[in-house]
Amino acid sequence: IVEAIKLGALDYIVKPFEIEEIKITVEKALQFKSLTREVRYLRSEYKYHSIDKLIHGHSRMMEEIIDIISRVSRVDSTVLLRGESGTGKELVARAIHIDGNRRDNPFVVVSGPNLAGDLLETELFGHEKGSFTGAYERRLGKFEIAEGGTVFLDEISEINLPLQAKLLRVLQEREFSRLGSHSVIKTDVRIIAATNKDLEGMIKDGQFREDLYYRLNVVNIYVPPLRERIDDIPMLVEYFIKKYCTSMNKPPATIDPSALKRLEEFNYPGNVRELE
Image 1 (cartoon, helix red, strand yellow):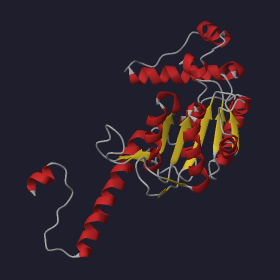
Image 2 (image 1 turned 180 degrees about the horizontal axis):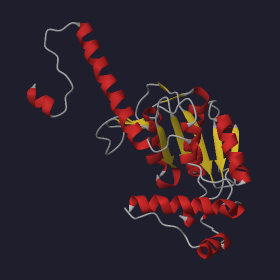
Image 3 (image 1 turned 45 degrees about the vertical axis):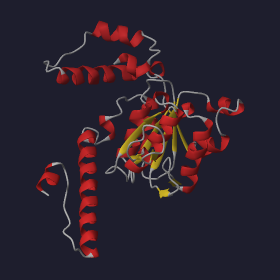
Image 4 (image 1 turned 30 degrees about the vertical axis):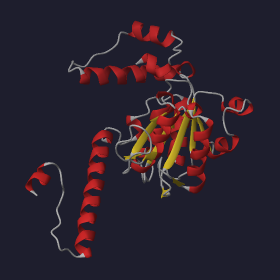
């Protein structure tokens, strides 16, 4: 018993036992798991406790986005974020999450371009032990990990058609199955998706499901490129300077007006990410 506890066991059961004892032990283990997940989540998210910590800009376009965030965050409608790469779509998704009723639960990011089809399916829905070569243990998917919270599907256009069908089922029925299992798992998550592609054009070309598009496109938010909101550059520059002075233990710094003017004149094909 002592050795088991040292290796991470939470509790032990002495035989013979009563069923009620088993129930209490399992409930304690589930509560411990839930609290551990909550602490891990809060530690990672503590710096994101308000919209103004995430969204930096006072241009008319950004004020409109902040207004939309405040209106959609309190309802569970699916949101589709559109805009070029590097514009801050994930930050907008996080802002919707932390401003809403699910803020105390996980915000989980799934990046389509970084995972091939089969790997992405496992990432989303999990798998059972032995469901494929190399599946040495059961793995929970993002939809289980994010229970009660938000799943952010980055670059939704990169998901293949078979997986799009499974994702559609999650949106419609609020249920899924792990890879290698016939058991149905109910899920309660909010889905926010993002893309920098022309989904309408992909539908015409047969590369994206039209029914999935309409399920995702309940609330549409366009995140503008930096060249369309030059007025935000001074605030963003100030934020990035402060951020890196703090992380590098440097004294507070300022930027020369002529340097700021040069930054305001640039086109930024990489958007805010390039400015940073």
